[in-house]
Amino acid sequence: MQGLNTRLSSYLDKVRSLERANADLELKIKQSMLERTPKGHDIEGMLAKAHAIEDEVRKKALENARIMLEIDNAKLAADDFRVKWEAEHVLCLSAEKDCQALRKGKTDHEQIITTLGADLESLKQELFFLKRNHAEEMDAQKDRVAKDEVNVEVDAAQGPDLALILAELRSHYESIVQKNKEDAEVWYKKKMATLHTVVKEGNEALRIAQNDSVERQRFLQTLEVELDSLRKQVGALEGNLCETNQKYALEMQRLQVTLTQLEADLTQLRLDMQRNKTEYDQLLRVKQTLEMEIATYRRLLEGEEQIKEIPPKREPDIRTRKIVKVVTQTMVNGKVVQESSEVEQIEEQKK
Image (cartoon, rainbow, N blue to C red; front, side):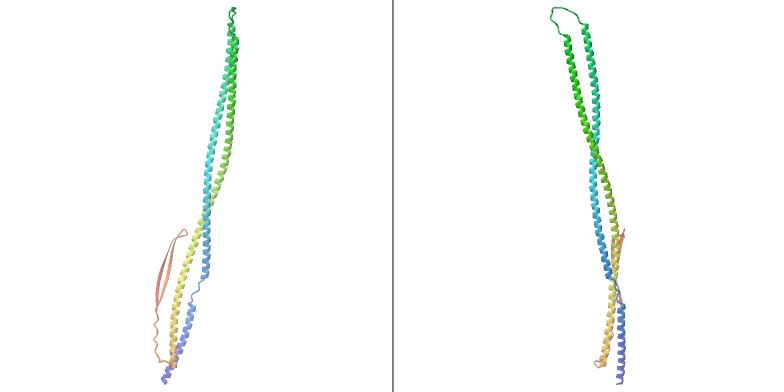
């Protein structure tokens, strides 16, 4: 009986020590859980930031598309102005050729007028010489008739009247000369009127062509100014597009770095959670073992069971797997041209 009391007191001491150890273990478990609680990551803030960056990227993409559309419209407008400029240039060259032809026609008409004037002077001189020769011949004929005059009285029939014949000849030739003179004057007046009309029409056409050429030159200069303005606008839009593309590439690079960091944080968070879960399971098994031992001791005290040694449980093997992801990017002029990723797994065994 004394041995039983001694053993009972030893069991009670052992139970009390186990209860104290259990309480200490529970306290340690709580402290360990509090200490090993994964630090909270501000995922909401990161998601909000990612959404804001995504909205900004979408806006930049829309702005990029709008700039590309403006560049295409400017190029089409420049092509239209170039076509108009080429057409106006062809018309200007045609008008200049017409002006040159009119100037040449005017020069030819002036030469014809000069030639006709010289011919008219020559005809006047010829008419003057004809009149003078005719007068000289008439005077010589009169003198010859006066010298050859004889008085012959015969009873023969009366001969022709030479004075009358000469008067008729003179009248006939004078009428011919007068008719030729009138015909020459009429032809000269008609020719001069025709030439004046042609010259007037040529001058009017030349003036119209010159005015048209001036207007076309002015319009051509306006088109050239507009074309230069459109070229400058296209250059500015292309520069803006290049700058936008660079900003977009930098923003994408920054987003890629942020995404890689978030993935690494998420992987580390999963590893921490897995490790904490493993440690929690271990502590929970230890607690359950202690509770079972305490319950056994209580049953022994109450006389329900024989003392039975409970073999200690074997600690399970704990394997920890770490996944490391390495992202490699190759950038040229701020643009990602190549991207590769490698995943490495590391296993650690704990006993």
